[in-house]
Length: 378
Ligand code: HEC
Ligand SMILES: [Cu+2]
Image 1 (cartoon, helix red, strand yellow):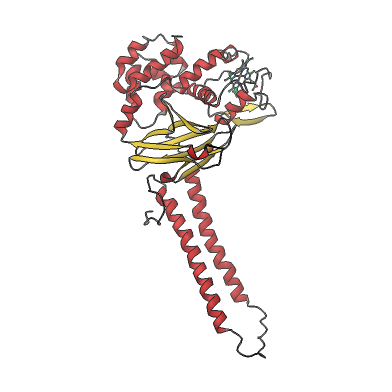
Image 2 (tube, rainbow, N blue to C red; image 1 turned 180 degrees about the horizontal axis):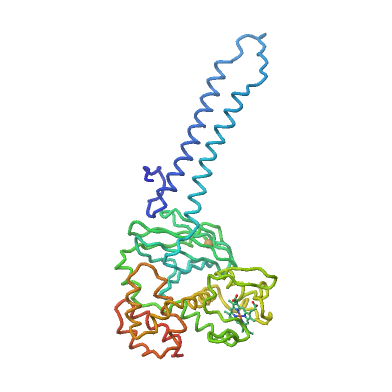
């Protein structure tokens, strides 16, 4: 729905901004209409029913069912249109689509840190392609912040110890301001930056231009260095459950309850393992509270999540793995290539190392080296 923009509203640069503005315009119109109506009636009645004579007594009024019903039902119906429209828009805004590019966001006094699935990291700058859905998985290392991009009409609080999500699809290339909109301390006003929306080809080039290991590959290293792998093995069951393929699936925990293995559950399993103990296991896992940063937690999650793509593993272990990765790279979603690159099955297979990855494709070359690099203790 495209309405003329209200004055003082920011540019519209995402798929939802038109509808957010339309709803907002609707609210303003209703408010204006009733404010004017009430004000005019006050003056009109004040004049019409003014006291004309010092001895004049008003007629007693006993009430009017018709009038009272009307002023109850009409506002109720109007309020319901706002509710239905608002709720449906809310669901659109706060339910990230499944096929989105995923980016991790960590707020920190006083900066925004981003990490792309391909490994690029940025601070107070976020590069995204135009016309692609982007999902942000967000948390904070310290206090509550709030991530807002006015031109996209999105805002979401980031809360310590929790993951919150936001998503958008930019419709125009350009640079758009991003802000922290929750007062978070002395330099709160400086906690802002830019979203750089690029043409998809420029974005691919930007992605290919450097960056470190993918979050999943870094998570794999952490998984080794923190000793997770001593209990969690990928082949057979060790002292802890096998984590391959658990992401997104229900897990039976002690007490007979089924919980879905999602970001929040994995985070809790790492920092507070006794909160939910997997059925059939002893609560022997130590807490990693305070030993891993929020970014590292996101990397561990990315790694565990990447274990859950057995279908992608088949393709990636073939000799044409480079091409498979390269082909998938041309799609606009960042998930598939990453799932392939960081798959443990992929990494345990003998790989030609960096050479094979490098020659595979222009855009995939950089990232194809990651699983190899993550494994060979270079
Ligand atoms: C001393 C052995 C041990 C170590 C070390 C260990 N874990 Fe665990 N882990 C377990 C056990 C046992 C369970 C199942 C009982 C429970 O839920 O606490 C478990 C459960 C989990 C779960 C939930 C699994 C599910 O299927 O629901 C996750 C996720 C997890 N661990 C991740 C990690 C990560 C990441 C590390 C390293 C930072 C780690 N673990 C280190 C023993 C360990
Ligand atoms: Cu802030």
